[in-house]
Length: 188
Image 1 (tube, rainbow, N blue to C red):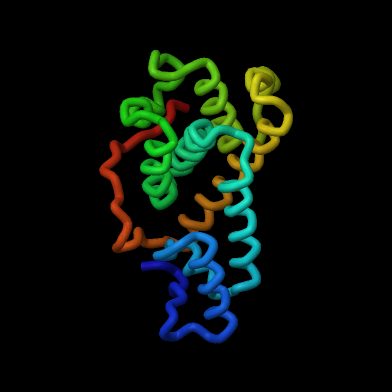
Image 2: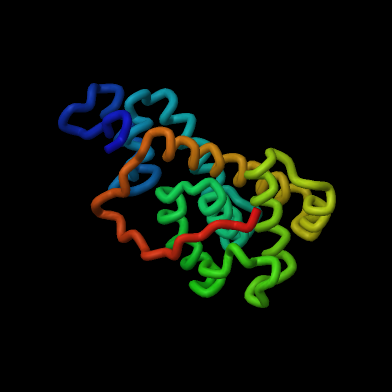
């Protein structure tokens, strides 16, 4: 049970109704529980929506690399809600099931390219310490400056999303086809 209620149309005030309209128009329906929780304070929800939409639609970084980074954040933070949501997105973006299942052994697995490893390593370091080592940053040079900046924002953002989902104790949506995923943890 979530720590705050999800906003639903039947009980939403006028400002929340407008925000729900915006959510449905921007994200489609049904709306995810994280957005329904944030709809309690529409002004905050709008800011979150703007950031999420920007990173989702205005991207230079490939969707595949972005999802490798997001799944890394989900595994490392233990944010099951976010991990379940992005597992399927990663598959649609071109990450294979075998790669997802081998995420925690990415350094030694032949399933990952040098660039994949660099992105996962970066996401892992940033999630653990708030900063990536210079060699880790340098290994991303082939992405270019703009895509590297986007990767920083993506990893930082999804760390924020993971913390929100965990702090609010969000439930998985009844309508969401949650995948069955193995229990995973990166080596320390």
